[in-house]
Image (cartoon, rainbow, N blue to C red; front, top):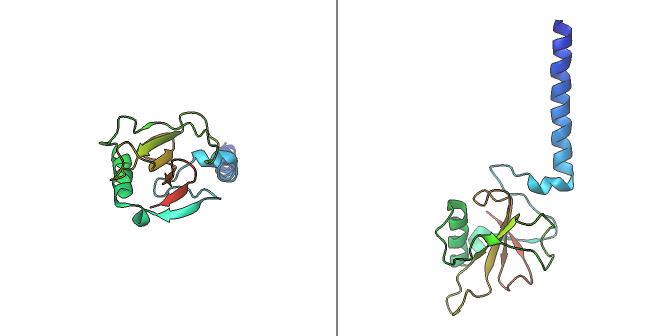
Length: 139
């Protein structure tokens, strides 16, 4: 009986390890997020958080705190119609305005974050040219 219980524990542990290995090597890994760090998405130039414009750093901090935001559209679903960011299901990406001091409207600068929980994003991207290009934000 004790031998059978030990074998069951071993099998369960093995299944968990294999499941974790699969998750980290599959395309589904983009949906996984370690709480202490965001994922690095291959193919994107990185931009350090400190290198963002001052208003970008402010917006990023507000994203992690859940607000307040400068625009009613902040936190709305980003459709990724440009297909530049990795493909995900609708609702995965959300966009936020990075204030542009001389702009009379929202301007061209945005931060787009992906993840199941807006305040705990898997990855965030900065665009200074209204979605023509993206850099991954590295905190």
